[in-house]
Length: 315
Ligand code: CDV
Image (cartoon, rainbow, N blue to C red; front, top):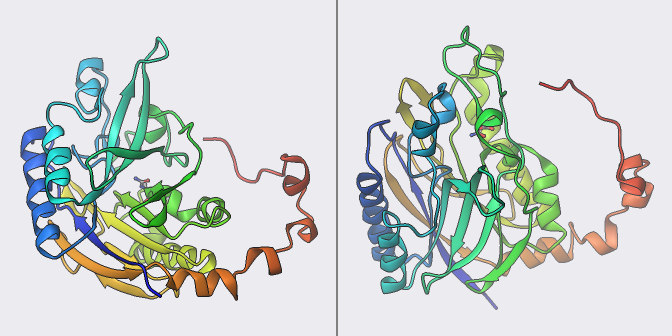
């Protein structure tokens, strides 16, 4: 038996700070049409795919900050994506900055949605692992101000039945945390989709600059294998507002092998033929959690009480 899902990864090159939403959506639409021509069922776009990645610089003006956020989804600028998806019967995953005022105050999240082939939103995820810091560091070549601009996501790591499989989402830095995969793995996830904006150099850890591409593949390949799931990771790549970002967008099989990978640092579409039934071999044998996983013997306080030792320092 096989359940084939053709998954397109739509890597983006840089977005200029002044680039309009309409211009960005035109780029996304062009890649969606390419994915349709390649017979894709789903197209996966990057994290914060509608604007330049503004956490890389200080924004003090509230109106300017608001301008990077979406207050509705779809909104006037993004509706064409939903309409085109429904017209062609293709699903999509889109990362964007979300401004939510439904609780009587401004809440900002780094958000992603999964949209079904009928153009309706299947699920929403808000990024939980926010890297960086809240106070600007003028001494660093560029900023990493996600903790300043976003709240920690409040929707957990759920999975959704969609497009014939069990789907989950994470965003960028989440992919470095094994718990993000495992929480979804425990729910039987078969495809995790995610976008990222990952600098090729980390100002606070220059000794790891040469490892950025290696770590990108390492975490996604391990997460896929250890949870018996496909992973589709999609970059915003190239030099954006002076920040050099890695590419390497790829689809990874439950074996941990890379099925397809983008080769450049610009807008680029690749499609992987994913047989979701391959997940079953891993879930029923080597990573059969019910048969082999033994959290009650791990000796971690966190497994029994929800409270565990915390290592590291608060930023
Ligand atoms: N957007 C991100 O979450 N980027 C982080 C960088 C800053 C380390 C990442 O994990 O790729």
